[in-house]
Length: 259
Image 1 (cartoon, rainbow, N blue to C red):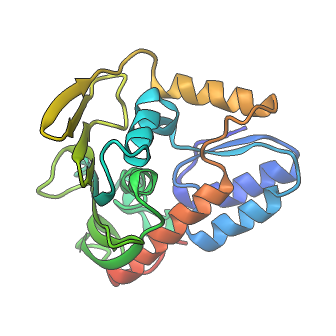
Image 2: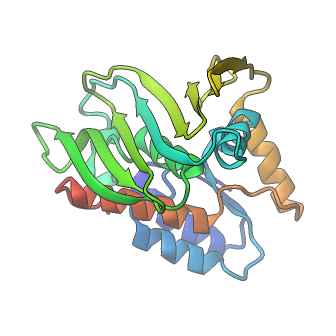
């Protein structure tokens, strides 16, 4: 079963699908908050059902290459990770700005930045600060969010998310290591276009990706997971970690958690 509903409806319908014995592909963000994510993870535990968060970008070869470079040693010890998912959505009546439906920039485009940061990072991050730009009509809802993070070993990070700010369009991930840097533009939809640049010891190269859409790769992985293959890269445990970080960012920015 595919759950494409607004953010605030993901948890109850995923729980209902699990109770009905259905495999679930749930749109991101997985739930409205970490407590809901933990409840869904507990419900799925031991059922034998596939429950997958639909971070489609994660199933494209580009995302795996990003992870391999960040953790494979070629860049050296990772010292900083930066991610951004910003796009313009000036229609403030859109449901993605609706607090009752778990809306906000961090929950929408921003959850990609959160997930990609975790993918590249040298350990799970801790939020050290955050700043939100909010809607005039509802100060609980972020139209843009910036967060600063730290990682085990002393590395630092920053993520930016926006549906309306000076950063009209920025979709980028960067991992900076002792020996080199990985910079990826448009990691979310590389099948359309992307720029993948690696610089190591002063030498720069570009790697090219394209081919089938991220969504095709995701559906193949979902089908493989249903067949019993180890293809689920975004299971509930991963979603709990992502939603916990989102909750912490909202708290650091002085905004209420969603849900």
